[in-house]
Image (cartoon, helix red, strand yellow):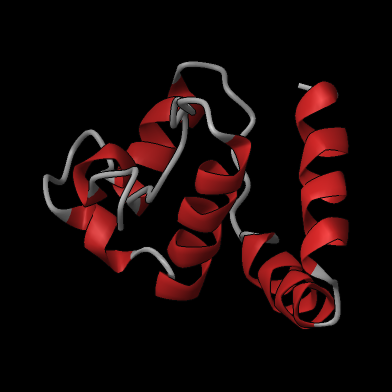
Length: 98
């Protein structure tokens, strides 16, 4: 990756766990960061079951099954069919909503 370090995706209770993230997702995110041209702050990454339980105990709503994988598969298929201009327009619209 060019713009991110794997450690940015670590679960707070397990150093090095960012390496367990989906490599396709990380590559897509790194590419999106390059097109965006500005820094992005990672606020969530890999999460161990233990850390998820801790968050639940603190009152946070925690998903027990991630929808990210399904979303990633659909996004990857869609991304393959977009032109470079369309990709840039998509990213601009997405970032404007943040």
